[in-house]
Image 1 (tube, rainbow, N blue to C red):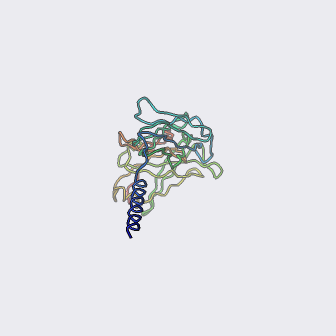
Image 2 (image 1 turned 180 degrees about the horizontal axis):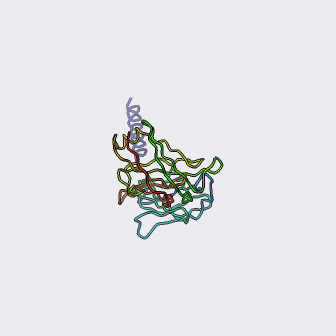
Image 3 (image 1 turned 120 degrees about the vertical axis):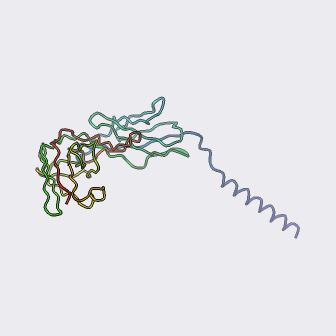
Length: 243
């Protein structure tokens, strides 16, 4: 009986020790590799070589940076754990910033592959507006003219003042595909209401050429929404009265 009790005690000690070993968290140190990748496109949906994009960690001193390889991959070695904003830049693409990148407990690979487009070559040469009942249409003429084989891409901005722009706006559209010119954009009345516009408001509209894979992001310092791909050669703003 005594031997049985002793055996039970020994087994219990082994089990407890094993559990303690399992509960010990590995030592990840204070820094590790941070990596990711990008895919580069023209202003439409044609994929281009993803090499030679400069990727850096904003605010790092000395600056931590790498250049993407032919597959769009980049990696930073021995990066201290923390939360970072990653900057991407390449001639013809402007700059994109990926915010809130969390790096902790070993090597981190950024899961989402950033898909970035080139500067837009689309100029909006004329804008007109039409309101019929509760239907609002903004017509945009572009140069070059869009067609089904080579569409153009446009983004619209809305504001209650005639100085509406990509800087001064209360609302903006997603990038829309214009396969003809003029392109008729049907404004979603409910979305305008959700953005705080109300019946009787005079709403001004501005449109710019953009890229299908827009590099837009929020600048955390200024709090502003940045649209790097826009072609700023744009027609004068137009207005309509909110139904």
